[in-house]
Image (cartoon, rainbow, N blue to C red; front, side):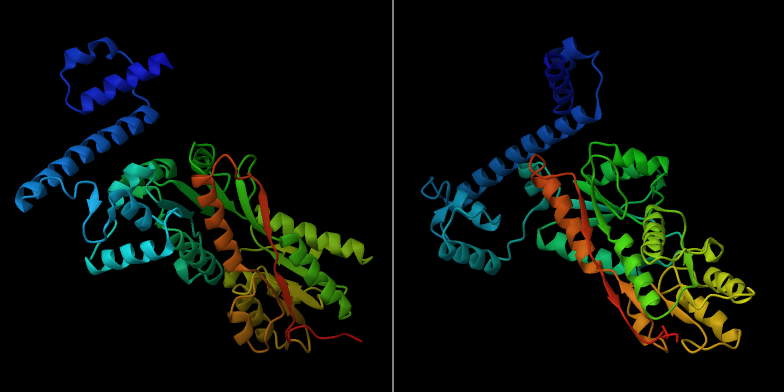
Length: 400
């Protein structure tokens, strides 16, 4: 600890422009990222104090004031500390006073200085979002766009901005380096290869991290109930008389593993064995692959009576393959989707699907991360499960 203080003193001294001989005793110590952050914070506070003091002195000279309003806001008739509390949403002032101060600030065109706010609170009020879209669908991906929108709304409601994290910022960087470059207070990770070494580096860093639909030890995870969702679909298809149920799932991720568990668990509980020959791996949010696998299933000597698609968007490819084979849904074959996006309700026939509560997922992720940032000692690093709901439409026929 003593060495750390000396190191900080040396580095801050250099940054503040002290002459080298003042800090010569500490010139051999290593400058770590934590020390650099500490030094920058101290430097900013010193500069901020000098600048604000200079401005106040200049104002007093220009106005001829001799201190009668020093430490007080003449427009509101309250102390500067009270104004600060009102503008920062602190609870220990009266509602009437808060309203008067906020109204006055609005009339004067006041805008919070984010740099000063960051210095005072020792945070930037900026959270990172790591979202990697392998299919290059961008924010047209209805499921994730809904998650991200609700996340953004909740973050902004609590006074935070959001920044998308990548590894190409003018030069090639890692995800962690981009987070540090942007100075984010924490990061939410969704739709990535969670085995990527750069993702693991970020997860294992000192930054607060929340993951969506993936679980790490000692990290907060927000997950949709994929086991329950798949069980609900199997039970419904079974109740309609289907026993030969095909399942086209996505890439082997934690989400897929949970859905496979739910599929086989429901089959076992209902007393029939899921046929592994008609459980095929496809790709999430990719219609062409789904179409090709659907075609293979339809060409089997004993084709399935019902097909589960990876998601509602991929189902477009499967439905096209069914039509090309001269078959009708649900008269000749039944189908189910997953996610419950709007597309499932405008298909003809409307598709039975399992709706995931994307708004709740995004909101919970934002709340969880902000809790970790602001209340790290009292926030549990737990798994929060967001339930969905079965939406029964016209794509599953009842068999005799």
